[in-house]
Length: 590
Image: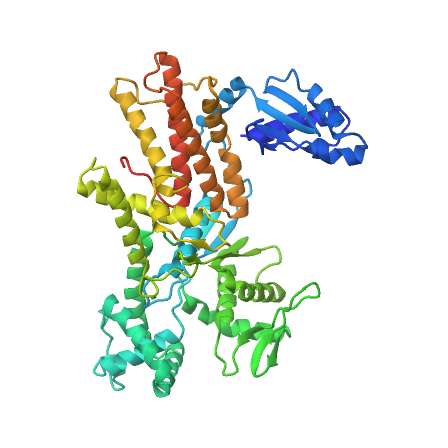
């Protein structure tokens, strides 16, 4: 279904052409001055130079052709040449009745769906998730949902760090602690135990201990490097231990990502790309792209059009070891073979931009990825504390993600219990739902590339531009709808018609709902969850103004009351659709 903006633009195109002006000047947009009009067209300003006429003359020409158009309540030319537009209440009501009969509110799926891989998560096995993992997971999950909703075939990959030195460090520390384990008995020839020799808690303690030891003990570090090499070369005892590390870690990661309502289609790691590295290196050599530089093997990626230096991409260290770039390139080889994607989107700290620039250029230059395949780096800023520095615990350490979630849930619980309208058990359950909205909305409402301040008091507020405010709006609508049914009315509102608006706040709410498909399209095209956040805040604000201006359930005209009920039911469904794309849901009561 065509959006309101498209329908209006089509009318303006016809008018511009009828007056002898180019159709490209007829674009309509939401008004910058809602106090003056609902929509505007600034094309006359741009056309003035081409047609050597005053903008107001062009605007007047166009407006004269639109005066009898039933779509518009009024269209005016305003100095120096703006065209101000207000839609007719009847047209808006007809339009919203049409889109409300569609579960996607007029938003159409991609005519040519793409296969898209989202690389997000990025956790390292054997380490707990911490606040540094939050943005990648939350933004990536929302982008995945938005692109799927647009009709694409989307595959989310956690891309675990499971193949580096941390594996050797854990194995070496475990050998020092429990040398009697069969994995360290050179004469052992039997099958290795099915049960791991450690719990997740023990594993999470082993790694930092081993890491600290490697920085002080060169001998320990050398043994860890040797263990890593043996693992990567296929040494059976260490492979068995590695599988235990993966099994225990992934089970815990799934639980913790699940607490964020984040899931992945693929649980692959760097190790899955390792078998592709030898052939990839050989192919780069055959193409003459790989050359030696200070002992390492590199690919030059600098281009003539670059305005700043782009260093060569190091693909292999002097000792033959692989690097992150090697693994990322080999992963692209695997993804091309398995999925032949049209697009691959990477979520990572924006400070990794140079790394991905180098990797993308090698991938395109070597033919690992076709030229038409889009490789997108969606870099995000840091989550900072109130002091403007990266978020830490009170004692200065990196906060575990589960502790952050617990803190925000506790803050929400305290606010819910202030009014004592629900039981403690219900308040606990509700606080988890609302807490997740506070956490996710607080992150997603910011442009991904920008740093932001994590303010637990502001994020958990039930007022202002916050997740709890959005949920409170939905819950308020649910309450009105329940009371409507309890008073003996039919719960099926789908057959009720929304009547033309009789007040300004009612019309503003309708116009906000009519923006749905435009917002969804923009969010998908720009990979921008923040566009949806801004939209649902506008919708919530418009609903609450309408709610305060209108006696919905006390309306004596039953037809009018039914129309109100249908309107707010559509509002609820629009908000619920949007928060699902952001990765959270609403409770029934708050």
